Length: 213
Image 1 (spheres, one colour):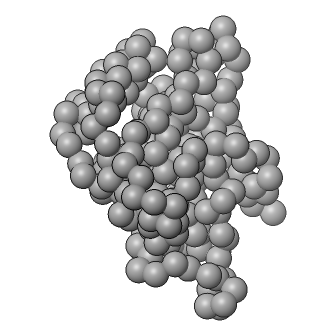
Image 2 (spheres, rainbow, N blue to C red; image 1 turned 180 degrees about the vertical axis):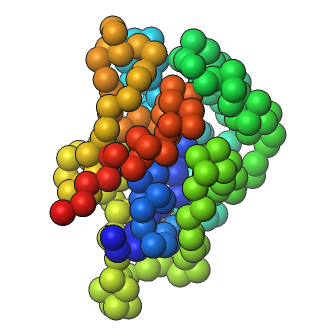
């Protein structure tokens, strides 16, 4: 598998974490102009009524603001809202009680920059998954073709409105979900959904979701 070029992401979907699992190394782009309505500040979990998007409010510095400079807004008491939503969605899952104390502190502490918050959460998730990805942070905007960087550029391909089926390297392996009896299996949700439902077996789901030729 080639190196992967990814964006910063808030509790990224399973597809994203398969790249952290399998890629020889990952470059996280932080110098691009910030784009709204992406996983940079949004994750999708399984609520009782179906997929539920949780969005971190941010302060926009202008249309050409780099992602690394985006600050988190304190508007709307979002930390309380997100944590309440996670509890409501997963308190009945097999591993929520096991992992709750790992996640709760992220919704009690203030982070100034979005990328710092995302990075801290990603490091905790990787620790819980037993993953040790080689992640390199961009210092300038990356243009792979001009720079001769051979990679899988997934910056615009892993996003809420993109069809994960277009990723030939990813086929979501089904796993237990709390509301599957009512909603059916919901693929490619936030890695939080995977962890709270599958616990230590989450790595196996990631492995089984990687499609190689």
